[in-house]
Length: 567
Image (cartoon, rainbow, N blue to C red):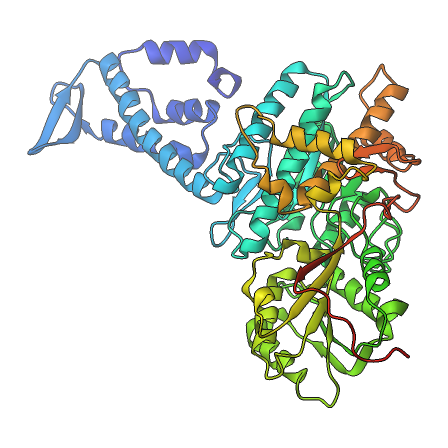
């Protein structure tokens, strides 16, 4: 290595063969030639200075080192002195390197991967292919990360592959226990799609990157920047997942669309207008974006059609912000739906409209809001809840403590409520009758019902999900407790269908991201065989055939009949 620097081969050979300590100038050039930085050279040069510090009486060199009980002087042949210098320097350098490595690992999730970053509080964000250890994102995700790492290794060894990235607010350190299990199921669903596609005869195979933005998506920019740099070098042709319907996801989608021109398939995005039109924030189209979830309009319209006839008096409780202080597009969209969908807006009481900021402590303001339902001359029998599920248990508990708690009340909300534990105590208080309605995908037992036209697809997915994966087993309850595994699977299968269509049209080459994006918007006529059934992608990137899977779910008490006469 050094001969490619300032030192000739003959100079190196002659100097190291001589029975004398090399000159300091030679040593500096030699270390520099070996690739050491100025900082890394310091322990070596310190050793050189020590060895050169004190000549012996006989004209040789004397080297002094600390020893137990004092100092000992070592008089050695010059060749032996050089070897000793190298040995001592090596020990010092190794200690220095070890310290630097330990510090690097602390900063990068216990790994040597600079793409992973340890955030304040110990949360890990960034991009990995699973080769950095299975526990980088927490113990809950170790089984699926182990499987991803093993699958990727097999795929890369085969050579004929492209890369998908799964972008998500992934973490096992989220204080909100409602969502930790959902993210585990989500990644398991994404992996299952890749593993099943790789078993087929179709080419190319798929390597999966996991890109975590952190639990609140604060670090979306770092994850997206890393994906952009990998587009060409790692054959990245599509991004799935994308995160929740909030401002950070819009920002990520716009950058991936504009800067990297990558096709994207959202799994959890439900806000109206959060599609290729870009209508969600009015800043222009988001080319390449598609989604497989049910829109908020789909959900609220289904609920409005199943409400018993009669007149209701509905209060609206909403928040338009995330805990980061950024726009929560999911809750904004729910708010708009409650105010505009005919079957819901007609019940809304203009004087019972309450908004809160989650940064101010929902557990403090929600009891106050709930009590306001009693301090009115009208009977508030319905609440339109345009907020996240993480605040819903506190809100339900507050409803049981309001002074008019004996009055039955129905809470209507969006698909985020699928994460609410059906055993939540407030849902089963006989002295405070509460019903929660939300619309989402069918439950597992509904997917398995004989009258479900997509039953066979779901059964095949469930079998694949719960089968052993490189020695790992995903629990069945991850399917039954959350629909996130289903939509994650469907988002990856959608991208994979576009990929393999592109490869079939040009079998002599590996499809690039442009070819995959072209095929994504050509997935019409139920071209995708997802876990939730057959569907397609329309010109705006929205899932088609939603009417067969939009299902209204009830939690808590039976839905009370309205006592007020209809208009």
